[in-house]
Length: 244
Image (cartoon, rainbow, N blue to C red; front, side, top):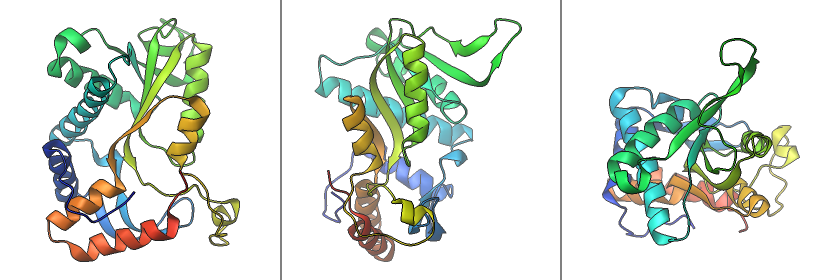
């Protein structure tokens, strides 16, 4: 639940949020989302494109995966799958950071990604990198909005003979899925719904992890004394709170 309590974030989360602020990746204002909702904040994950920022976000993905694995001893995976296109640099750089965290545990984790169009020459095929056949696979991507892209990735994994064991994204906005009326610009219908992440987790039966949540952003804004931004995010959450 989004909250402005004094919960302390892990240092790596605080560092990532502060870098996102400094780099213009996290900005505040008035933003019309694909759902036609008016959001007071926006996270442009496409701007994690410079050396320092891609290192920071991939280290954060690695930390989140490592933390989850330590808390769930029977859980693990063999391949990070990055859906084209945004997932491609994420899967490769996060593999590198995982090995740096614990080479014994994560050194053999591989990455794989799909092509948007099947290549008919050279090595050919749809996939690049490690084969997914018989492997435990985690999808890595920037965000889940309606869940459409993630479902496409799941379909690819199944067709390649892999087993989906988890999904990790950069940001969980912690808001209910948009209605058809909202998508058509007719406003919120007021019906309670679950979040996109919650729906995908229920459908797949696997954990859906997020590096950062709206709650994390609110906590950090409070710590930085940015009360105005914090209050606007809390109000937004209250308006679009999901049922989980």
